[in-house]
Image (cartoon, rainbow over all chains, first blue to last red; front, top):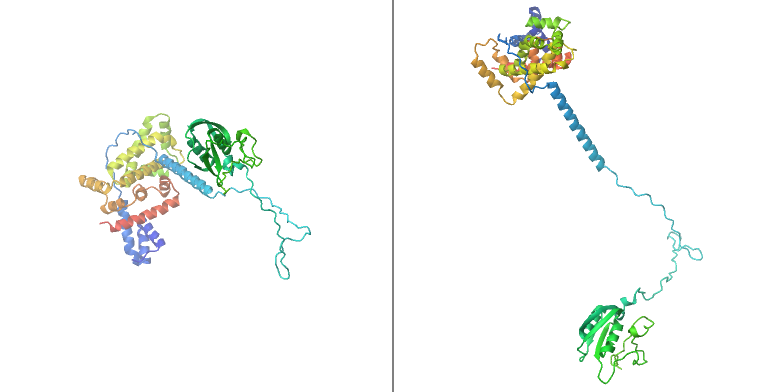
Length: 280
Length: 185
């Protein structure tokens, strides 16, 4: 069906509601094709106007009900609630967005550092950037750090014989005591056969391991002979000789310092060398 | 009833205001007079929107209960009748939307027609079918205009819009009604 223009449609509704015979005739003369459409609208409006007549009946007595609320008030409260929800959502979105967009904390600007050019005596540049027509000048290399043996803060870190040993009122078999002392000082050891099997008493408070071993050798008749670096050999004293002490030590450099004498100048402890250790 | 409406339309002085003032001053009989005067009018609006006599009668009681409780909110800028119709239209539309989910309208209307064949308010079946298909807001406009014969200004006041908006809404509602009416059996 051909679509009717809106203004013609409005005119048809107007005529259908007015039901003026002259207006109907004029419309039909002007728009003969729409005669049927106009008739349909007149019929429809006529049917629609036949409002259902309320049958006469007694009006019920009015009794106010409970729980009725004004529709407007309901609508208003809904709008208020919606406004709150919208505002909360907007604030949440804003807060989240601003938190995500927050810039990382900036560090204060670093002041420029003036690095002074090291100069030689004749003020020649140490290094010149090579370029056309320029010779490369290589600075003379000076050994500013001559090779020196490393200095250690504590000599005991290097020499196990200087390692302090702590034995307070300890009673133990001699061989077990020697083993413990060597272990604590980081010494390796060997024991010759015939070492006295006795129980000894020790009371040392931080003395050097070499001193302690020398002291024990004097007291219990054995001699600790140094072998290689950090290695000792314990040899019992024969019955016909006495253990070497400061008083009996030969003057060829054997020193028994310990708690009975002054330590050597280099801070170390020198034990008596075994006569056959170096083939002598 | 139409005489009352004509009087309401034409008069510049709203005689209902006197009854309203009396009621607000404590005269309960004044409200009974207002109730009796507008009961059928409000019932017709509710019936046109709800398409069910029982629900309409129920809605009328709720409408007058609202008016009874909140008459002090009537600001007197419009006629009392217009304010009352507005409450009736809003409440009926609200009720119709609520009842729409129950899907009872057609069945109940058909059952009631079958139960009361002698009822003089029998509606044209095609009109009834088309009206039932319409949205409650569209039904309200057609009822106010064709059944209650309110002017466009009164309709505008009753649905809370200006005259032009009321005219446009009425036109659209009528077009939608025609679409349903022409395909109705």
